[in-house]
Length: 527
Image (cartoon, rainbow, N blue to C red; front, side, top):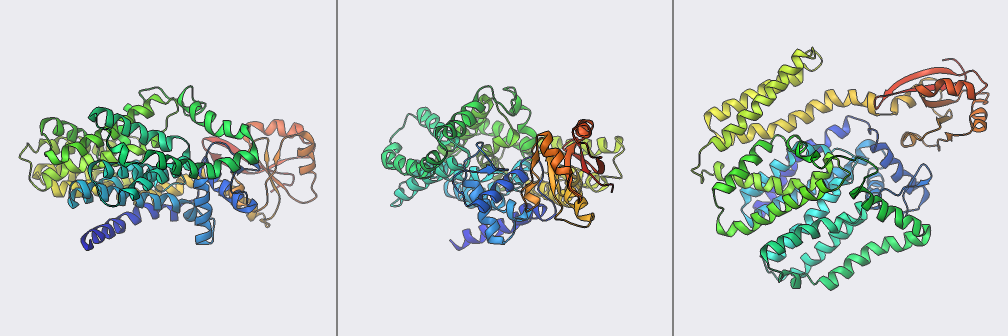
């Protein structure tokens, strides 16, 4: 037990800078982060913990659990600053790392567990999502706990079976309260496919489906019933049917073709994807040990069912594939362990070929930046690409699995460090609305009224008073009739329309490029 606790402590110490460095160095970025933070703020301010609201309007896209966590984090740290908003996601990432370590250690060995966690925490998308205000990482934690509990029940019988049954259904309920029915539907689909393939359903008796289902339903309905009583069945329809079935078929947002994830998976799983391909070939040619075979099959079902499920859904985003990362990390770690422990006599080409492919890609990326004339702006990144690419080639030539693994583990930390000090400040200028507030403060009074022109922009997170959206001519005229300076954020293309709508002279006192769109800050007095 002490050895496991020490290993977990080392893994957490390695992971903490990956997930907590960048949040200290940036603002919240559009479109989602300030919007989610604003929802949590409104929830805490109003005391309405049942129904999320955005700018005073009911928000039907997500259930409330993750917003509760964000509000709790703000209470814990005593601030609504970006770090507090990102903390639940970072903490969830650490939880997933620990769950993956426990899974791989229990069914294989401690080294596979440690390798799995290292591969997971240094995968580009996993690390990235853990640094953002997104509920997807907490969803992944819940899904991982559910599936781990099932596998524990399926392969091992202990006096604590009822505990794993409870964990399965409670985690599924929390996942549902985070992002809807997918919280139970996805693990249910994975388990069903695995049981049909194995033709063994005895584990269902151990899962106490009746009592477990009652536990799941009780947790979900503890929120859902009061929510319906407060807002009616229209709210129930919007948050269950439209937001879930609507994304499955003819999605109203993020619609992508069925093959979208075929060209997405390789880069979001970097730097490990070439070695995952080698692992697939390795498993086909080299039968696993008999005691490991069934667990590996479950991991392949987890990977395959998840990939096909999200490929079939019309609404697609890269981060929707996050549930693939635990099985991908464990399968890749099992493959690496065979070479690191030198138990595998197969050709080292299984490691060297993907190493050369990855090294070539890094060196080619460096060359592209130089040819595009960006060597001065990104000289630090170019040096990192060249050094890491060269080290990969050196490790491959030396045929040293340990050195090669160490170099691979260094790639994502280098990306995180470079992003925190170079990329994040640039993105703050493009994706943060804080510059607008800074311009108002520079005018001498941070409390001067601010409004939005005809459309909502998530700036409420940065300011205390409620910001109105000017929709009618009367509202616009009344706002700019103030004897003291007032400000309005407007799209540049609406400027001429605004000047026709408002009889008062309007002056541009700030210009901004936000999300590839031009915004202006208007005032009825010159700057």
